[in-house]
Image 1 (cartoon, one colour):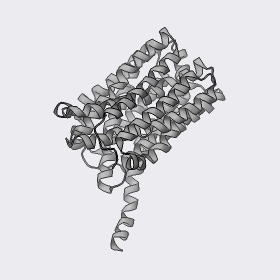
Image 2: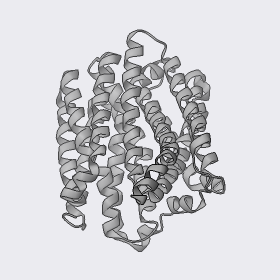
Image 3: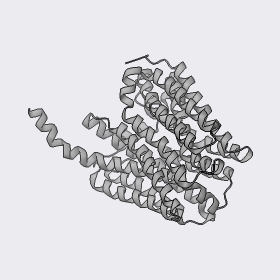
Image 4: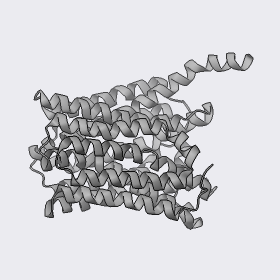
Amino acid sequence: MQRSTSEGEQEPLIRSRTLPLLAGYWSFGQFWGVWVILVLEFQRHHSLTDSRLGLLYSLLSISAIVTMLAFAPRLQRLTLRASVPVSLASLGIAALALAVAPTSMLLVTFVTVGVGNGLIDVYVNVAAQREETRTRRPILQWLHASYALGGVTGAGAAGILRTIDVDHRLVIAASGVALLATAWWNIRGASREPAAEGVRSVLSVSALRRTPALWIPALTVLFCFLVEGSMDIWSGLYLREELGASPAAAGAAFVAFAGALFIGRLFAAKVLFGLGPRRTIVIAGIGGGIGGTIAVLAQTTPVVAGAFLLMGFALSAAGPAGFSLVEETSDDPNAIAAVATVGYTGFVWSPPLLGWIADTVDLRAAMGVIVLATVGITVTGLFARGKASR
């Protein structure tokens, strides 16, 4: 009885620390949900080719990785109450810049977006990891589910607002305001602990040298990040340019994908418990590949939306399974961080590749490359040495 009372007394404190983090990651996801629907208007407004847009995306990802490796450690002595809001606010300011900056400033603007992404990926995840350790609750799982939920609300709102002819720059700016609002909330709710210990572990890749078997889960995560990141960037253009979908229809199709990710990740732990990481990765890759193939071959938006739904639900457990496989492969304290760093490189080389393919062939061919990444997920699952079930 005393234990129950103690847990009841801790609930308000847990909520006061966890809800701001979930809201922050939701605003992170809604920014990208808005972007995937409105990138066509942005591209036309600035007269960007697909290949040039791909290069800007690569610049964004490179700046994010440099931030994680070089600049984030300089903030590691700050408390999470300071570093988490700074991370969210930096992307919020970058989103406002995307809305108003002239074409001549796009290089600087995309670098700023990358800095915000890199800081959020470090400090919000570190804060969530701390809360998960403290509360023994699946905070990280909730955190990444909240990102998918942000994709749902962002894409849905962007599609509706463009249908009633609201200027795309206002919608992008609104996503920046949401980030700034959650940054302010986190000033009041985040932990006062310094982030030094968590940040050092996030930035190390030495575990790959000590345990080469970690390359299998690292490649799994890389392919997962490639698929999810490419869907955030190219699926809206594919629907609107290749299939002629309206903003609302494209938004609904992406909502199907992001919504399936959200629902799937809420139950990812149960799936992993029943199947184990190796089988989960194989099944996720096959399911994602089937959905991706249908999306590439389909000629109508409703069929593509159904295929996106299958892709999202199938792939929702692949990333968590990849990280779970790390725990079965190595007990190195830097293993998770090393795998995440390799995974993030998929955001660097895939945008220019897909942009070049879209320019030289078409967007359908670029979507075909995403399907090949799901094959990569399946292959890594087949070669994994993790246990069949747990």
